[in-house]
Image 1 (tube, rainbow over the protein chains, first blue to last red):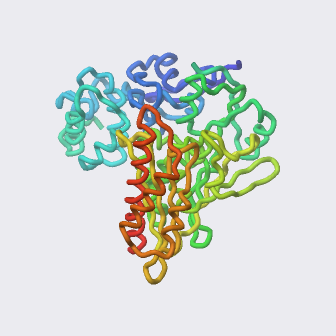
Image 2: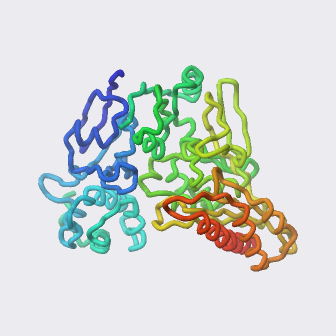
Length: 162
Length: 289
């Protein structure tokens, strides 16, 4: 089996790696590049723990062939913070108790980011739809929805570093 | 674990078809891979060559014309259809269906053509498209062919595609005036595939009687299935809830669902009856405007 060259940008850093073409994007992110914030949960496109953002779109990295990310710009949960400061969504999750065991959080945060990037003023229902692909077994979702709502309302604007 | 394969990435449809004709007995085509990678990981599918058509921009389009109707290229994502203004205007039932197909992440990467070629009998698009009288265009080295989508599905995960052919396009005709369509699946989690699903389309004539109808069942057998006996019952009839219930009873009888961990055969038949009744009523009310 011939290894293939894959070029991609993750959290602003460019990479060139040689991989077996059967490698999944989650494996590249975690095992080749060391961004272990992204979690492997169900491995069957169900739980959303492996959610990352590719070229502005949320996807489940357990079910994307890494070779299909050629030339893509990818953001993982590690790419949310800026110079040691938490992203407003991360801060809101802390304040609202939206982390419990924390396993779903890396994916949940990326789905929340993709939602707010696309629709900065979602209704509560749109927030629930925005995170429908992410399963959380601890919070019952309400604290997560409240955290995203708080960001959408602008409660964390002054902390935004941009 | 996914078995090793040789990865091929064509830059054009023509190149993809050449690769397909060369490796037809030992290759598989991947597009979004949202279904395929699961079965590959489970070891249910092993292939020597994987031909990746995800980046074929040639097949990534949605066009609409008042004569030719809607044309959707095979590599168009579910999310693109869900967000298309032209689809929302002329085929709202397609947008509603897409909005409940798996999750946003899957719709962002998964493709329309891939979904149909995978031919899971629980897939969402097929019943709706068959209710809308859609055709599917396939292509091989020897040219293209078009067939009604209802003839495309042969058996569980099997289609009429030849080994050296690709799905190229889905074509949906312009609905006749006074046509309404509706789709609903029954599931426990909104983003799941349907335990069963029903799509219905109703066209009325000038005096409000049924001119044409289609009822298509999803996950009620090995392929999406029309209930022609119930469709015929509706022709020439007036709006009548008892009639919809009768059509539901026929759908329940004529379906061939199997039992699995999600529902018994009896439960599925019951659900198909109820959903058929409801979807006919909904489609009829939409047709009436």
